[in-house]
Image (cartoon, rainbow, N blue to C red; front, side, top):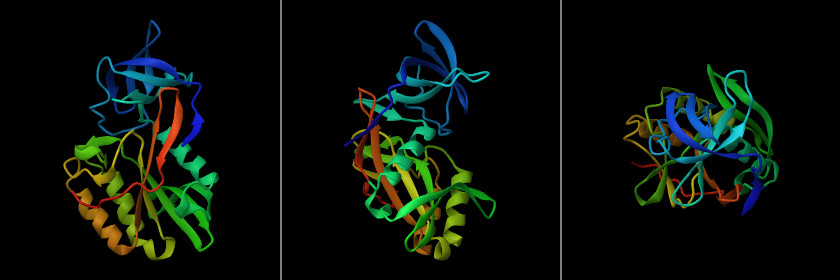
Length: 233
């Protein structure tokens, strides 16, 4: 299902990653710096010569933001800002069956020293939702998270677990890459993550995955609002 078109994106070519938040790209004949919102390692994507799509931001230091890179077919959306935009669109349009009775009440909700992406107001009370970018492709075409140790991610999930009886939280993995069969945690990326996830699941945190990608015409495509989640290594 096609959702909306990112018509403002322009083609770019990756040169290198300079740090967690900046990549060097070629746009047309110009070498420029682009903002990278995804702090994962992304080693399979941020390689010299790979084609990508950038948005123009015209900041004081950076002119572009890297949004997506070419996959075997279509594009992987690396940009967490775009992933959030997709989730909010799905929520607003009532396209997520398990969230049709919820509306967005607040972004960046502070809870016990951690910032959680969303506070939702649902017919059965308020709920929290934390998005996680799951763009690592592993064996059997699983979408996975994380691709490196994530202290912040573990802390957020633990906090959600402690408040699960009150706030009925979701952790939602945004599998923003084409042709994936299910979601699984990537335990080699962070050996501790599976223990945190299983603990949170036992405490009442609900884990879900949404599968989307960007096609060659720059349309955001919804593949599944309920991708299978396998809480195992």
